[in-house]
Image (cartoon, rainbow, N blue to C red; front, top):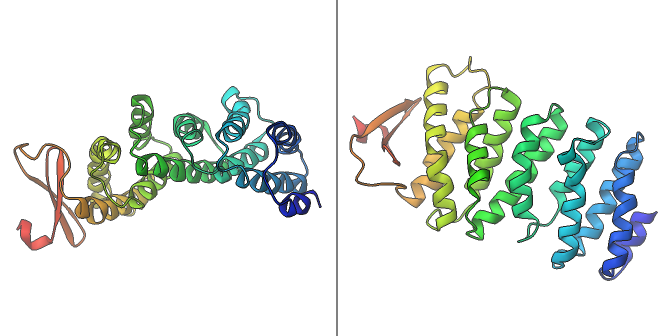
Length: 263
């Protein structure tokens, strides 16, 4: 009933009212009752959608949603799933996206609940895509964390990062701006390693073949459309065979080409 009231409300809430409504929503997110948690998520989605242009309110929302997980004070997996689903629904913006991209990798590496991992991965993907589209170069710690976790030994976490990063890069119209180019250059070694591992043992790799699929999709998709990345003068072409493709690449740049061009 409350959700329907706010859905019918014709405008955004005043700043003070927004914060007063946000507090009980977040309190309800820790309820042991699944219906209460679900309604809290729905109400959160409704009110933040009305405040997509209000950076002050969005900043309050992202700070409050992340505060308990970052402090390790959630009441359990169901509570975290509710919070991360709210995080996933936050509109991308100059105030929400940097905070999500900086905070989520650390939360994701510690997560043990599959639904929570899925929600975090989705949130990371959408906000990372926004930052790259806006050509906002990621802080070095965020880039390092993403690159590190692409080699995480826990299969669910590794798959989550490959899915998030792969979706974000795939969604870009161009890799030429500084921010996308910097991230692509940073993750290329991880793509190379994944392609080699999955090519050698497609069925038996611990994390499954997803990372190989992501590597192939990015190399044949955005990276091919965008041309080479990195130092074009780097010596010594190499090649990796993956099923019916061979990818010729230089030490810091990839040039996906048809199989017979590398023969």
